Image 1 (cartoon, rainbow, N blue to C red):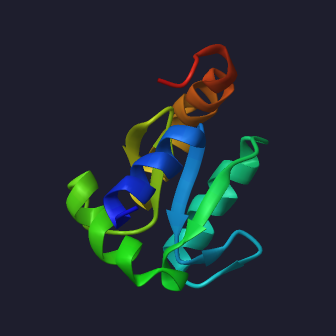
Image 2 (cartoon, one colour):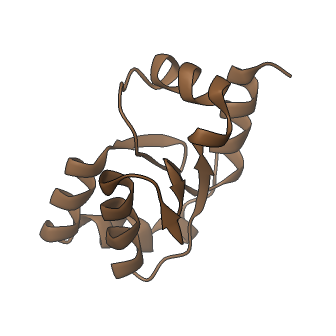
Image 3 (cartoon, one colour):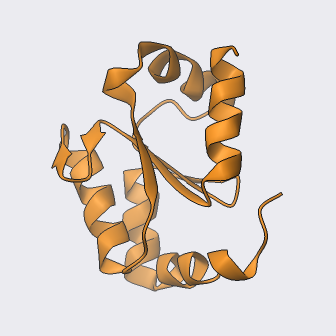
Length: 108
């Protein structure tokens, strides 16, 4: 399985997926830490991929997503965005609304 197939599979089978540097317990950059805090504030469980442990995903995902930076939040197979967008959505209440609706919408 090539890297793009792996990425597609990860996105398909994880309703809420954060591609980040490090792990939720030990983020390796401030932006990833802020994204984790935002998701935690919503009280929603999420999957993550530590892109520092997989160079191929770190290289290929920005091309696939057409999004150059990390973290990247994917919900129901769609890219939501990076840290700034996640924080804006948290403050507006939109993030919690979207995340709370995840279980009501089947994965494609």
